[in-house]
Length: 181
Image (tube, rainbow, N blue to C red; front, side, top):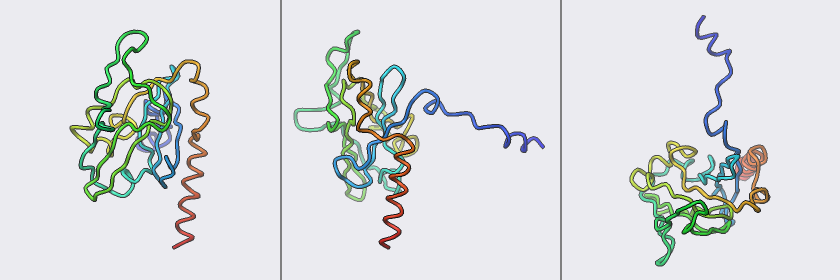
C-alpha cells in the first residue's frame, strides 16, 4: 500500500531542473555527437557541462586525465577573479576551449565554452577525480562557470537548442545510424 502511494506522487524536480534552464550545442566545431550542455540560471550565470549524448558519457570510456592547459601560454587554472566587476577573469568566445579530456583509448575531446562571457571558475575537483565528470555531469562534474555580459545575456541562447529541440536532434541521429546499419 505504501509503495503504491509513493509511485502515485510526482517526482520532485532536481536542483538543476528547478533553478536552471538547459540549453544545448550539438556537434560542437563540426565534430559529430560532441554535444555540450549550458545550464543557465535566472541570474544569467551559465554552467558548462557535457550533454548526455557526449561520447565520454555514452560509450563507457575511461577518462585518464583532464587538462585546463589550453596552450603553452594559456591555462584556465590561472584565471583569478576578484571584486564586483570580476576583474582578472579571462574573456571567452563561443568557440574558446575550456579544457581537454584525455581517455584511456587515446581519444581526446576539447570542451568549448559555447557562450561568450567571463570565466568565473573552473571545476578543479574533476582534475583530482575525473570519474565525477561521468557520474554526475550536471552537478559536481561541471566543467566551468561563465558569466555573459549583461547586454548579451538575452542573446547568448540564440545559437543554442532547447531541451526539446536537442532531443529531436538525438532521435534523428539515432534513426540515421540505424538506417545505415
